[in-house]
Length: 203
Image 1 (tube, rainbow, N blue to C red):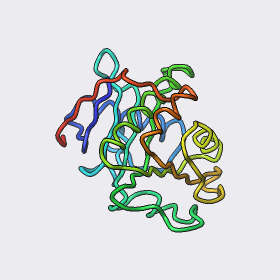
Image 2: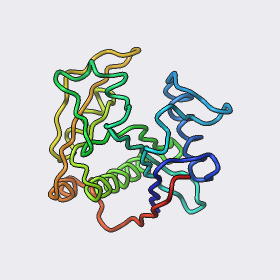
Image 3: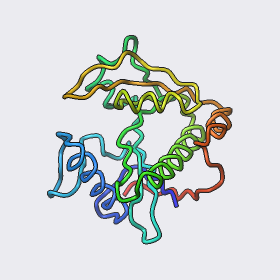
């Protein structure tokens, strides 16, 4: 089941398991220099009540994959830290959200991670379109950006890839419209009518 949260708290067991997995993926495995709370939770300054979280829960109610969407009318990563990745103006506005913290636990294996990724992308597109969001942005490694751009939707780089802390990273823009689900379904990404959405008040 995919849960949608507007804001998250460690008092929510599903959110707590998500923040633990984020620490394992981004800090322990990837070596990111980001805040860690209580030695086990990866939580940064953008994890507030304005963030939208899409979280897949497994049969035991534990985190099995997630992503965070940030409104761009408020502080967000591209504008605050990676503006140099954009050749032109940074896409911002009430119809624009930023994709961050795609977390796919390694315990799922390669095929499991891909399946969870596709479910999250499907839910992300539905959630965005339902909420009047027509543009999504993000910053990823140059290699993963090429994968994203080739998924079938209307997508474009925001500038050339650049070196950052030993990696090559780049920013991208995705333009959504009612045809986007069909475009992604044609490439095997979008999976319709397979997830249940549980809306929650801010935890």
